[in-house]
Image (tube, rainbow, N blue to C red; front, side, top):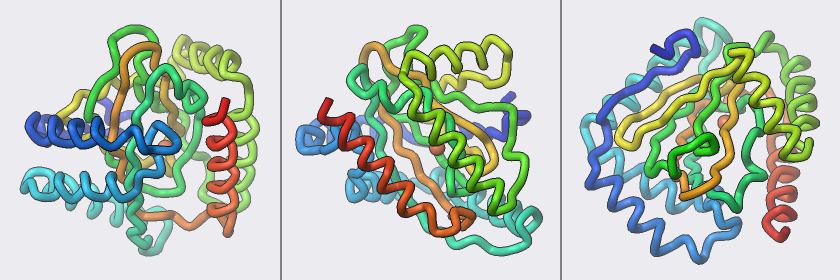
Length: 238
Ligand SMILES: [Fe+2]
């Protein structure tokens, strides 16, 4: 169904019991998190990833996703990529709208998105947006210019970013992906432009696992991450 967007959906991979266990753990811990969306809760996210790996079904999905991505890297980039797994926990609600409508490419070639909890249904429910337009070039120069251009757009006011998103949806430049807890969503965030809608009510929770850093940031990855963290730190105080 989503093959034209480079998205593969694995249905009913994660049990409802495990999802409940993870959500209960988040409920207990999140009062301590800064920022409150849990993006820097690396240890918790890594623990949840290990809980998932206790399932044969999840391990099979992860193994398939990794081998497919390694084959893509070999065919497209002509080299092996370091695994460089980064686990991120995203808990998004009406207080974290600054993270919405931020179109970007990942530095990693493989993203596994594991929804843990949906927001309340409606127009602003945090849905994933995948763009049909793929990265045009894999050259270092294009990568840097893409990043600079997207970083510029990411600093537009939320109202403008939201208007651009709705324009893109109307023009069918991108598709809303309704992610269901229990499923696992696999895509190449390095080549596929993507973003999220904002959340108006309730809280959307996802574990996001990134694998295989494509290494095209020319040493800019760390400074850009610091810049984003500085922006998050500032917006967290607002
Ligand atoms: Fe991403």
